[in-house]
Image 1 (cartoon, rainbow, N blue to C red):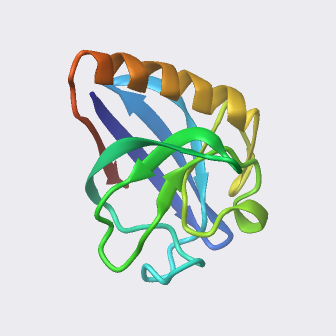
Image 2: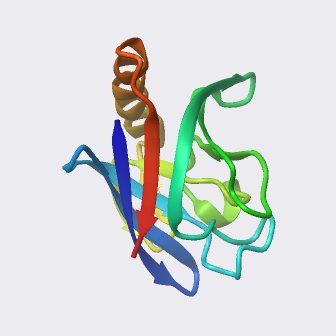
Length: 131
């Protein structure tokens, strides 16, 4: 399954649109670009493999693999990038401002449903991030 994240960069955050196999799925919010600095920047553009992950805090979510200079970059629910993210990506159903959105859990659940199907079919999940 191929995910493509098309980003727009702003001083106070990064907004994006996430596409699955060419079809729009949801919007995304992230921290602003700050040269890939840990905990304060979104990750660099590029191509990454995605795997499923579970934690008590976020329950089922996704893990972005092999981000240069970074670790534990997740795709998890959040509605305010500056307050709730530390370099991760949050899917949202609707954008409300720069780095802010609504109904993140709902958007993540849509993405997870597609991810489970892909993995059942033994397909790799990749994420390409570009502007």
